[in-house]
Length: 209
Image (cartoon, rainbow, N blue to C red; front, side, top):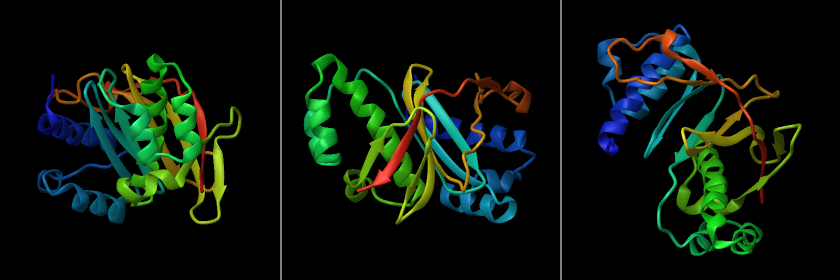
């Protein structure tokens, strides 16, 4: 099982493959520069925003023409989900999680957490101060939310490789969201052709409190 450092290296490799799939190629020098410097470089030269995420069992790279944030969390951790919801979520969200059976609380918490952390990444916010300012709203047909402070955001949440994943991006219109899987991004033979498109399901809404 990959550790944090190895997962970060895999995420870099996956980013290179994802960029190549969109006709963007990094030099050897660019591919090893610090992450924030690399993201800025990509945005300045190609107009593409980047977000990376990894957890036990999943590595993600997200690209968008506007701000984007992605997050993923693996299952099976022993946490006090109600106490964490009290600390990081709105009062209504925390009550909703506390009202669930014990065996459903982890999944519910992670669904909220991944979307909230994705939004924090997209807005360049802070996990410690902004998570409880965001409230997840659901809509089956129109996955766009307009907020006075932040404009229009699209939010997607679902399951990938057994993990909970969230994606948030700032776009003026409902985007053509496409999800791809690269089975072995570390392989020396990994290329744009390695990507397999996944079906996107589970739209959600964001609003600010």
